[in-house]
Image (cartoon, one colour):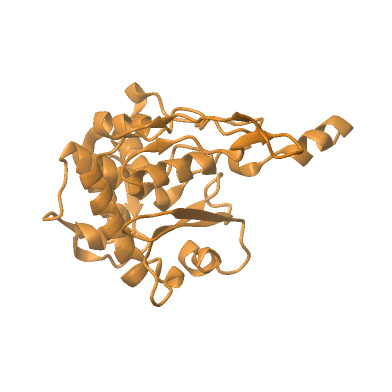
Length: 277
């Protein structure tokens, strides 16, 4: 590695300069799009036999024996891939892409750090049934961790897409302010009604579902786990992650943990959720 590469790597921030397949945390985005477009509502139920056949592919659920019949909330609590393939199919490519755009997945976040990457997405016209199915549960596209966190924040903060930042103002030594920085916010990227529904379902994920290792007695916490396989598939390497926020009714803090290539246990719910707790 050259000296220049070493210098560049020293300043490289994986969370904004590199992309990854988000996996199941992106089910938050799929479900938001489905609720917003009216493709599903809380009265819908979904059946999981442990897999789903899409064209020539047999795409399996993490629970190979299947989850059976599930409510909408249970589908997210169980992080069930077949249910989310159904939800994605009902939402359609247009609906899904509309909310990928609204939630900032096609744009850099505009964070005040150098070297921010952008997502790697399918061209919309190239999304067939298999691509739609895999995107619905967070595979076959890549985003930066910061893009994922920003989208998740918009889903739970009442629907506003914010610009993440570190700097608030510049000051002189005597504490007088030179300038205040301002950052754009897109109001109502998601409706408040959908945001309220998502917060409640994500609360159930932590209280009774895959995120229960982030639960703290007496605190109101919502969140979502993911365990994404790294490319190439079958490499046996994973990224375990968890996004958590609190409090559920009026969130003021959101956090995300990614564990890159964990050894041994690699499930996000088991190893990343306790970090956020």
